Length: 468
Ligand SMILES: [Mg+2]
Image 1 (cartoon, protein in one colour):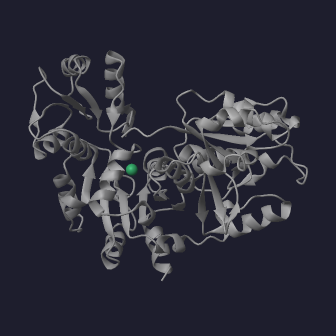
Image 2 (cartoon, rainbow, N blue to C red):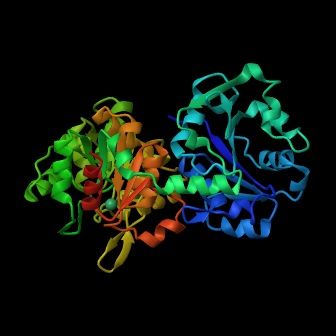
């Protein structure tokens, strides 16, 4: 499924007269407001993310350093909002079919809401999508490409609203029920109030709505041979609350049966329907797109072979195949890679189980599946379709297995750039545990903001139970 591309244009050029300092640089959640908004747009999957800066540019640009966005400078920002619109529009690639225009002062927006705006546009024939609360219109507004020329021709201190009346027949609204979502930081008082409200947000309240869990294993349940705090209590909680769950991992080298056995040794009874690794997710994806018996060349360990066999595929020795599925294996040789290269060059579909370029060993970081994919991409000029986190396929399959909706599902993981980013991109609730790879001080620097953060499963369980 290739979705039409929706970009984000963040309008951060204005001078703020009501604040003692540049509004763009007000602190929000440990980072400057402008960086917070850019992160939100990127986490929602809007691409590219463009930030138009003007007033105080010398200070605002460094605040965006290292973030996944392009920064454009509007030297004519004093001419008003329209000048920033045209700077932002001029930089959008031709492949973009719509863009969400975000003011810099709506800090409580969520990736889920930005995705809902894009989804509303994709599902209908409207060219302008406007959020509303009790009928009152607000930002951020999505405009389809057909309106870009009209937007670019506006002049003076007017924004996209100027087109609402003249294009009333092409307009749709997206009503929200929570006024906080669209709240803007218009005055120092509003800023202080919003910050206070956000600080009081109760994690137990978020957890109360959860009916299904997608849970990472390494760094969450255990680390190496060590079982992590809260392990037993977590499985008790799942059972007690009748929560649906899927234990997921990007590691394609082991089979679900092996995980079930490992869990049994640790005193937890589960079954293979509750375990999904990237190899099985790849095989399930193939099963949806190719007939049983299709010839597939597996490059990888037992996990990949077993998953493909279990879904009824015929395994190729590498002379012929319709698909090449690549997972990590320390036994993969240059000869395997050469066979895969020839097959992909001859038109076989190139699928990768997971994008992890490295993984930790006792001596440091060593090559993972992503490095094998990079080798094949270099040799074929064909990018792989990647199944594992943070890409959508593994999450979508976990949701389908549990018959769960994103709004009622929580992702639990220890990595920002896989578990959490993938969860945000799918519109799921997210909880980062600091019991694995990520440290608390990395949070403020990261463009990926989990909804909830806990030290470990033990704390998550405690908070969950406190919500009763
Ligand atoms: Mg992990």
